[in-house]
Length: 287
Ligand code: GDP
Ligand code: MG
Image (tube, rainbow, N blue to C red; front, top):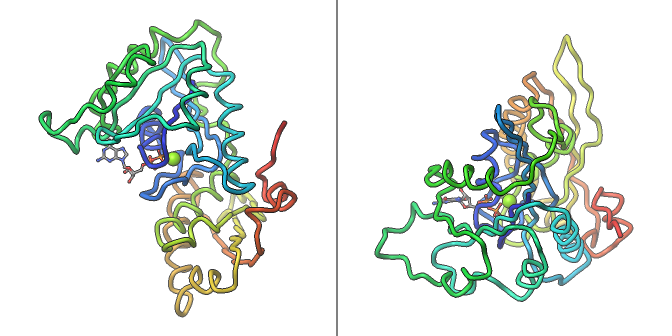
């Protein structure tokens, strides 16, 4: 089942709350989640596989086109859809998303998220106009957990019966390499400003697990311009150092093992617009 909605509505936060582990990059900036990440919730009676969708944005360049293709592909195979909106969004369904959602035959839930920020009187119900397009409507807070038990109950009731797809102790089907690169990118997103976050791609260059000493992880950080490299490194290397400290702590928690994290910043002009470059960075356009 898929979790869709505009960038920044709280999709990753919701998935993490549902799965009970921090596996998807969460950020105050839109479009942190550039790839599909699956979260798997296993209970004695059922297993739910969540797909956290990349933010749906109309394509302006090859990279955004890639994101939208990913989203459309993911939606084709889902058993149930959550569409997240914010309580004060005056345009809760845009031209890019509406047709994708309307085409789906599966049950669709509209989730009004971030209810903790609004008193009952403050809610202008802009979503009432689109509510008829959905099978059920829930008011939730991914942050506080309000409304989530009811949501899970209704989800279980609506999902088709199926043998488990994954082992019960799998939290995600993405491997640790991918998650390590995502964690570094998340920290960069939080600590850099303006257009810089959107020009960053991260890949794991080396990932060596060592039982008797720290795991060795080298992450390459790609930016588009020399000026951005300066900003990412920071004065006297301060910013990169901070990114490294925060990311290392998260990666260690993920792997449950001490980690030596090495970060390299490289300039790759126009990687966002170059299809061959996108493929090399791991963002492949599957057709
Ligand atoms: P995504 O882009 O849809 O995946 O959104 P994220 O999960 O990254 O969340 C974007 C921002 O909204 C983060 O700062 C979250 O902490 C915040 N957020 C998510 N859910 C809630 C919520 O229920 N209440 C409040 N107040 N903030 C939330
Ligand atoms: Mg996200």
